[in-house]
Length: 507
Image (cartoon, rainbow, N blue to C red; front, side, top):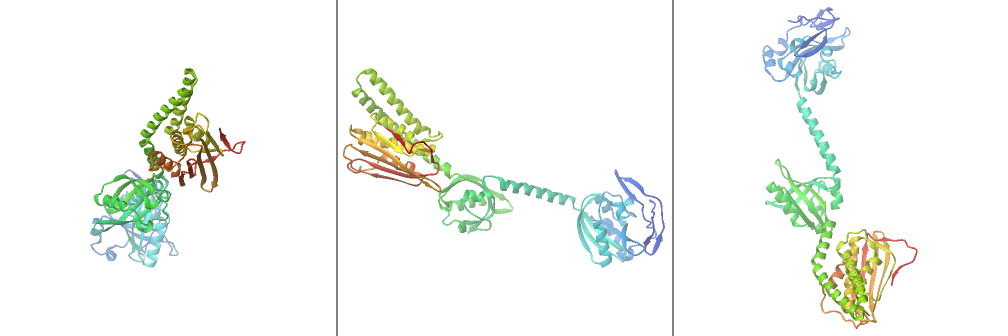
């Protein structure tokens, strides 16, 4: 048995133990314990009358750590420390402190880095008799411990505890993971939400928003969705949303789709929907992005591609007409060759504008002139209006509309006769959300005009053009004097261009 020493005056069970040797150290299980001086517990009163005769067998069999402490009081009766007078084997296993070191050691010597909290708990329990629970970290031995302190007598108490370091480490790791998830959740550009499906007789009828990131509102236009249902937030929401998310919840299978949402302002969404967890069978996570603009551009491009064949046929007809008119009016072969070369090049330039549509935009005057030049060898189209730069998408539509009007004028209208003329003009109105363009195409001096019996591709193309913009319209009138076409569109990408003159004029 290791010796038990006392330092100063100690009251244990009414006995006094007098000073002993200086501080000493022991090395056990590869650890260094600087425990100062131990206290003589040989004269301590037995614990059997406080814990019962079978207490030791029980204490040494339990998995929890257990020790019995006896307070150390000053000469005035103030509790200044306590000494461990018993510790079970689980105490050593949980703390790493050998029993022969722990028993007889004072708290402040055994756990010098623990701070004042353990001693304060013991003081309160011994003084009031009210048991207390604790959950706190220790720097030496390192770890988290939780347990319960109970008073045995005026000077004694028991502590039953367990090492919860792994539990706290797991909680810290979970908290860190949740923090990373939340930062990612808040930072991504894509909209993200977690919903809980609501079923009625196995049919999905609604869903409730449980979580939503900041980008959710930007992509959907819906504000503060958490806690509310889809039907509550969107009147007339399409059934395919409930069917899609309901299938994900039932089948536990992720899907990736592009779906329209006319009820949400004609939006279209790319979505990736997936089941959240097995234990949450009705919850679905949704990562999505508003692709309305992209879909609109794809539809426009598809429309243009579908009509490319028609445009090529018209081109061949125009080439035939150009060749015929050039050869008929040219004084000689060389003049005819030069005129044909110039006009066919102009035709190619017009089609390049139509097909590319990816440039940095261009002046409206240049776009119109490129579209009509091939039909206007005698400079009978007058172009007047305020300078402005047109965005590529609008420039493409405008070019096609002008080209179609010029083609019709060449075939049937003012440009089909020597006396005919065309006036193209426009006005701009600045609005808070863009610029309103009002463009007029007015023919005169051609053959008498009447309204066609049916709407051909040309008319559809003109109507489809830039009128697809906000507040757009196309009005075509057919007075006898000549066709009049008025196009109105609000273009957010139109930028007025400063010039030295009041207007742009071309021939």
